[in-house]
Length: 260
Image 1 (cartoon, rainbow, N blue to C red):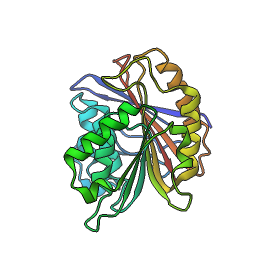
Image 2 (image 1 turned 30 degrees about the vertical axis):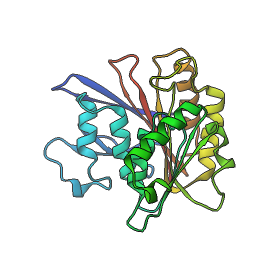
Image 3 (image 1 turned 90 degrees about the vertical axis):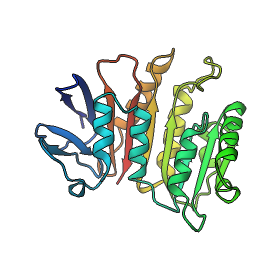
Image 4 (image 1 turned 180 degrees about the vertical axis):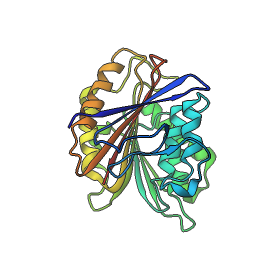
């Protein structure tokens, strides 16, 4: 099925947002996207919006912040994760980097009974060390134990995640390690293997979130790989969408892949 693109413009800010779906939403009114999950897109009409009207309550502010340029794509991603992840869930940070996504995910899954688990992966020892240092400085020991950090390629996630455990979210933040060696980047070949692995371990109602950076050599090729993977998933079991800023040529893109 040919992907369908919707272009929404914030006339006050002059910023354009494109959303590409693998399954067609209903005809959109002049509006702002609220949710693109469960095989359909639902948009709110112009005027005041009540959070209770939408399955993903709390998304309005984050999305409008992204459209107006006040919210980073990473912050929008975190807001989306919060509407998918539940206390006690098991999630995977496939590229833990400096640990900020890992830390955010732990706060989402950890409950009062100290359940939940975050698997944090990265191919670079320095990234695992940065993440470990951040968590050690920020968490009490019991919660710190809920994070399992491994220096391993994200394509190998099935080797470390127990097959009997349902995974609610797999998050990717592609490119190079901020502050690290820019020559060490995620590659299309291994990222594709990682996406395939994520699609096998994610549970129904779960999400694969992919932040793609295109401002470095190899970034656009990796984007093409991620986009092709998301676009060709069967629409009866998956919904994929793509969030991007059109008037910033090297801005990161957020690709969301939801399992029905």
